[in-house]
Length: 391
Picture 1 (tube, rainbow, N blue to C red):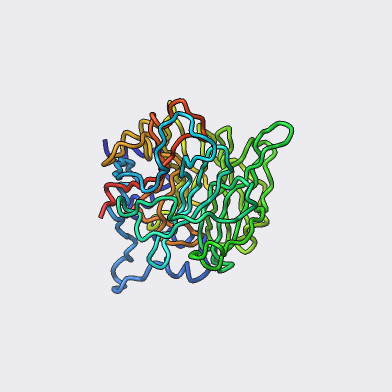
Picture 2: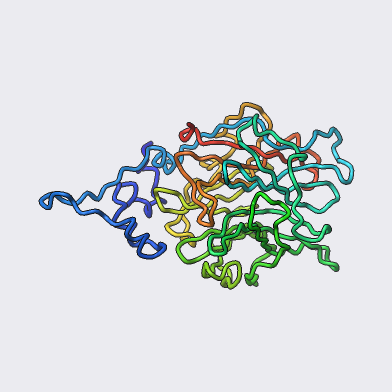
């Protein structure tokens, strides 16, 4: 079945898919006159000839939009020591989840959520030469726990990027507390800053992000930011499967965010992450869903960071990443959760290169999950790459 006959939901991309991108690119929000000049169409050298309005797209980019995804990966790069009991004892290191990473000065800086039974979650950091298994395989000994809040605080779900307006590294995350009367969790979006990502002690104490809580939303979680032009956009997901969006002036972020509005609604169970697709200058959202206990990733696209969002790969029969379209050298997971693309740059624009696409994720097997509660499952960190983008 051909590409164009399979893409009715992607009509907003037809200008690019017909290779007529330059005229529209000049009208997109940018960083001022320099961005417009960079996208301007050069006049033809011969005035008798028509101007060249065509710019061929890389075959890998077209293949990505055709959503015939096949991924490959190796063993996990990070996992807790194995335990044989169904219910691990209190304080046992159980899981590594929610990875986020940036490349800086020739190294990968990896942040993960560390889980121990009966203890609050923490965010830990490590600096690695590579994320390719088995060379990247590390243990907790290679990580340092970040002191972002009080020791009793439950801190998780980080996103890291270099925030150019402040000329500082920014870490966005959440702190979860239990309400005294009901015991229900209460989540607060937080941020910390650092002049040097290589200094784990340099992170500032956490401060709340300035975003109103939507009154119609249930428990919110998994906050992720991205910029477009002079705006910063913040996304989060709720426990009832909704994705919300808020924005502020880039100069004001992480304060001054607008009242959140709903961007998507579905069977989502974990946070939406948004990226700029280089060459297309379109935006890609990935979000997690679940089928019979197995987690997989869906994908949506939009012309701008705030939407509107259209389906790209949004079912188990046509997923972005699911067990059926991933080949692993070791059989260690049937779930692909909390995906984070490895970005082409470290700044707040969150760009990804569709010709060299790799994704961090948290994985676990059916045996790992059997008869265990959410805080007892031994989640591990893995990496997969899109076969069409393999070097």
